[in-house]
Image 1 (spheres, helix red, strand yellow):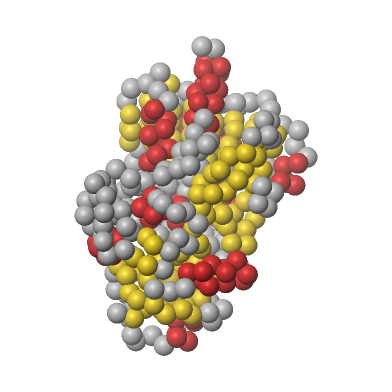
Image 2: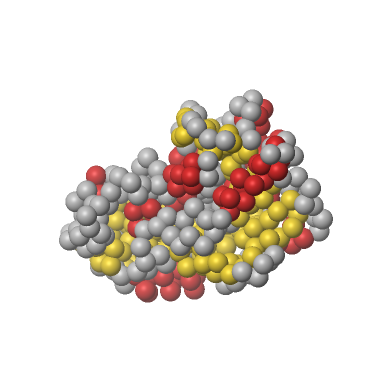
Length: 364
């Protein structure tokens, strides 16, 4: 069945329907990962976005229960060059990509020139788009729908992806870590558990007082979707935690910590989404290949005059801020994903650093 993707600036590509039938809209972005499409699909940070995979063949190893990064699929749509009709992996539950998307009611499109689409986003910047597998809307109507849909900037998507209640991920461990959930990926919870932590997850609606009442040894500020400046309640909660308990922020959690320390954020032209982003550790000159998924970034100049904040990591593609450390209280954060699943695992040592921070804070 014919399908189309139409951008708000009038750029249109035609392909074939994949997944659910219908019309969907969101901000169009591209992801450069060669593997890990299930992790991409189940990452809550993609809420409100249409994700294009630049690797040409997607779906060949199927899907399984173990690789999911959340309880569902939160992205708005999905774009691939070719969706494999054949599933070939012993871990797969035998669902094809089409069946998986269909079961989760995700409208998608295949058979489009994803290279042309990616080049368009790189040249013109991230913008809204609409995917439709319905025959009724004219091309001009789809372009209008894309132009009229809500933009990512200024929009709080965190409330769309979090659970209302707290829960225990692991009830044994030397250190009690409370995860401030803004759309947390399961592998963050898995890595904390592997580091020997007892893990409690609380929704982003919790206040600093609510979190401190749980007597944590450390707090993880999680990843999540949308504009960090729009999540004002999370910034206030983070302010109330600084200096009270060791903090480790990842992605949106990094941005919230920087905003709580007086920094500012801005929207990147087309964001960082993929598994091959080089990041330099300023202390060691070590270069890591990292997974990234963010459309907003911390302004380096907004923190440059603060002697309390040390810039620890830089993106080698565009010299943007990738990590900070507070000089006087136990708090650090990174823009990339050290828990990266399916990989790479260059930055996984960050969880050990967090454990060492909690040990030092307790005087162990």
